[in-house]
Length: 381
Ligand SMILES: *Cc1c(COP(=O)(O)O)cnc(C)c1O
Image 1 (tube, rainbow, N blue to C red):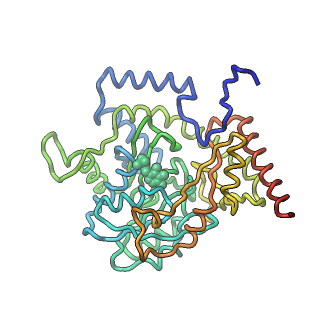
Image 2: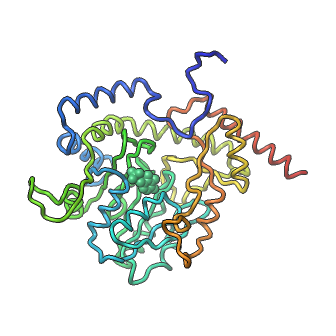
């Protein structure tokens, strides 16, 4: 090993923009340009990004907001449900999916998922519907779209809007329809490590419902239109001009970045399918996955993580505690959700990011192989 090796020794779970000098140069110029114009709040960059993001998602409207959590919260507020109304949420998501329901004065009702795909299906949702439930949230977890058509149909049968939590699925599609255009509305996060990431917190809602869009536009900025005319009580939840400008630059690279993630996933699939480290299966309807995470399941998950860690390969667990078992949401009578609870003990996210080098991929694969052969030896003892 040479001492001026530019690749860090460890393979990280993901890699941020500061590792890409060319992109950094372009983004720093963009930031300087916005700063010199003091174009910080709403205005041209935000509107420009909103138009580009709506077009990219195949929706008529996009509303830039301050985070993915706010995107969800503002949708639930805009529906105008009675306080205490319930919303069906899969229990294996980032906690924000449920928190947004709570922050809007509503109550999450937790659903189980298919342990082979980690996604919620119509079969998990239908038995939970009663007169208290007024909406369904689907989460396109890890970058894979849920099989949404049967859920949309279920929603139509019961008059329930379906909200997409698309915070992990920028650029994914389902039966050739882009994520973000499938439900009544869709919520995106541009947290820095997402497939499209800002330099801080940012989010967006997409929808084809122009009245809903208008309501969310009012809510995100004090119900104000024009200045100092306040139509409804709202909040400060706007997308920043700086973040919008950064996102416009990075959006131009998103397709290529997602293609790189898919190519890495194909290598890992070829290596791991049929082994003890079975990758999650694809949802039957064959949604186009964008691999925000590459997730395998192992009954020896913690041993796998230690094995890879010792070889300089970082891993993650998404998520170690199901939402309905967190202190924030656990109740003495919380339902058992065997699919979600089983996944929480088995899932392991392996490194996957667009700039992963062939050497890094090799190191990851070598680590998985040596784990598998050690496990095979162990089971023969
Ligand atoms: C990241 C994420 C969110 C929350 O987004 P923030 O921008 O961090 O508020 C919501 N849902 C899911 C599934 C996420 O991964």
